[in-house]
Image (spheres, rainbow, N blue to C red):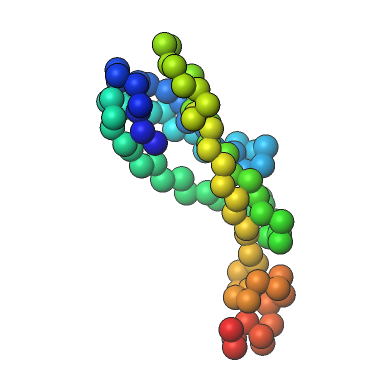
Length: 99
């Protein structure tokens, strides 16, 4: 993330998989023009493998005097595969050994 404003910012960043909250970060003193990387270790135990990707959304809370709130939300898609399913056919079998 990057602070594109001219003052330091404090805000909350929530991360969702589809509509389920999977992480929250408290970002403190992000200085003007500073870029910061956050790492989320997502426990996927309660999420089923699927050929349909999960939509991952990160959303930063609005800070006072913020001018551009359109860049507070970011989306990516992630597909969870079954452990051992190397070829992505949702079946773990001999074909995964030859892929």
